[in-house]
Image (cartoon, rainbow, N blue to C red; front, side):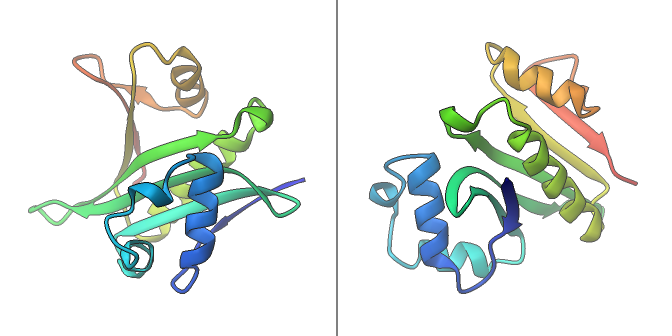
Length: 145
């Protein structure tokens, strides 16, 4: 059974382990060793991990952004699931967890972008009720209020 959970302050090693497993080479791209801790300490940032009996299988991370009009929006920057665990509902669970967090934080909108060539991702976001931006980049958004 795959479990999803939000990583919290103090779990820097778990964050590096998660990213290295799902997005190999992550540790090599760190600007400095304090990066993971700073990310987890930033109240605007969030990351969810998916685990199969403790093995990292997927991740979703993003940020909460406040616009000048005071409205809070949540952007999901990265969503990925390791190949052997794809098509098992993990990505859907991660997106739902991120949306639930956005609602708890008072976000009025949740959004993300994907490549125009990524038909699998587009099908996922449509299945979750996302409204595709009709112009420009392939963006999906959800009104949360």
